[in-house]
Image (tube, rainbow, N blue to C red; front, side, top):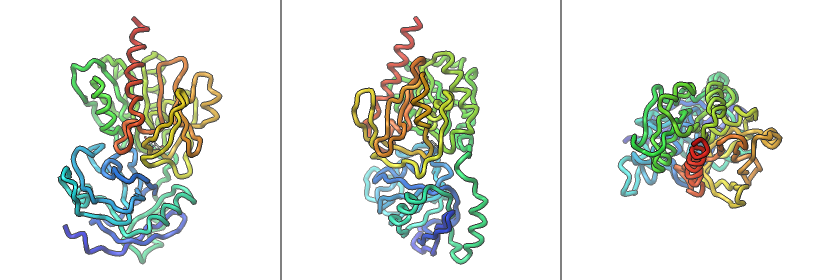
Length: 372
Ligand SMILES: NC(=O)CC[C@H](N)C(=O)O
């Protein structure tokens, strides 16, 4: 494909800083919150992760595209990032398992891509000055016009985005004769989470973001799951009501990332926007229950309030992020519920934390025994 004729392009940040590069894609315009991911591999999973909806992704790995794409590596049915900013973009690939180049894959999804950017300088800038909105464009001589458009882009703080990526209708995943039935609230669920549940003998019914607890009852679930997803957790009133209803009935409940934040909100713990967030595949977490370290996959820009979690008598902090002492996991004392801020399903990333899916199955088993 003719991506070699690259036009000059800029990335204009909300604070007025401009970074220069070359427009790789046909789509030559995008807006969103600019953030970076430090993963050295896993670009296809990152670009299709619904949690990134509305965000411009800067990749710190210097080469993007060189191992192509495959259908197995997608985390949802389409590319979800708002734009891609990278150093070297390659349409050629050499991985035998790949069936398509990244350029074609992203063109099919109409994604705006700028390469040849000094991504080290850009990432340092975001790290020092914080996450903010940005605009990507070939209108290099019309910065005032771009500034106007940028000012019209909504801030991530307060933004509800789960409704944009959630399923419209319920659907099923896994083998219907499996031992456990899980009702999953889809706030932007990654496929690898559903795979991890299905591989532990779960049959999953995935419900839209605004489903009610009552709507799940005819499925007769053994356990409940609240998924990851994009945007600010604070406006998710329906999901918080869902979590409260599940907890009130003492059903086993597991939450990942946005789901973890929703569970915190349902227990009176507030969330806040972080300076730059955590996005990468080597984030160190300490499991406070066994004192072991875990290297984890992370992707979040919000976190739960540590002091409120510590002072809540029904909440135990189970995991801490070792880089900045933010809360990485909690469990409830009086209810069968736990959640983590990071991604045990990885996709991409290390598998240190997949034990959490086994822990969920154990929780379902022990809850069942207690109610017999
Ligand atoms: N991966 C996620 O679920 C992200 C949760 C939320 N959107 C955040 O940025 O914190």
